Length: 243
Image 1 (cartoon, rainbow, N blue to C red):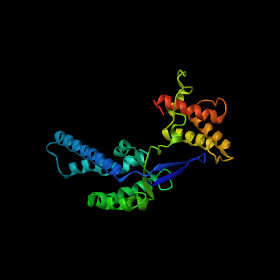
Image 2 (image 1 turned 30 degrees about the vertical axis):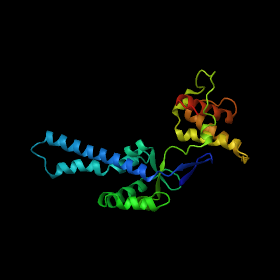
Image 3 (image 1 turned 180 degrees about the vertical axis):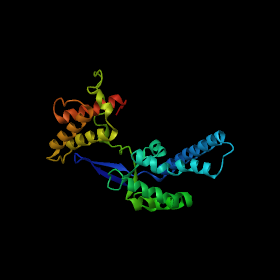
Image 4 (image 1 turned 135 degrees about the vertical axis):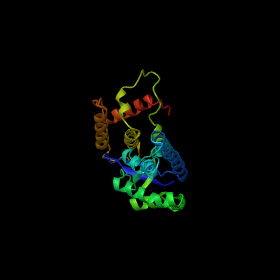
């Protein structure tokens, strides 16, 4: 399975899997159902409100939000449509950075050719033969679609077992953190346990702890590395992880 490497601000590399063609097809079907529903709801509402004035412009009014659905969603929802969010996939630049509006716009323009006009045939063939699962819009925009959840590895469960004697999380504020941010803490912890431990890891751990403590609005108790371990444990407590 192909992956995209994202280098965080703490110089920790996190790898994400490229979304499968199957995931993208299911997301596209879900989005199509949503778009069709929005179109019909607007059309029926206007037909009931203005029964004597249902002309071409009414269809145009109903068509506009449907036509701009993907562009608006991906721009406002960080590279996701509703279907993509359900399938836990999103659009990013091929270097792992957040996609830009220009990229979303290019993908949206070419969607009409490879998906709407050609019934998805061009997009399907291109994505299947491309190593990163890119359709023509992705190739033009320099984007790809990744799975939001990181690949499951042993390191993801290193500190997921909870101490039976613990009454609750030390830092309830971890609820403010995203999976990606906690993933940074996991990667730093894994790096400290690696046989090829970098001499810079203490500095990286300090930077990661400072960033997460700032996001949580708490002070670091103990060493940066100990703080990161507690953050991961508390996050797993709150989210019901069992290892």
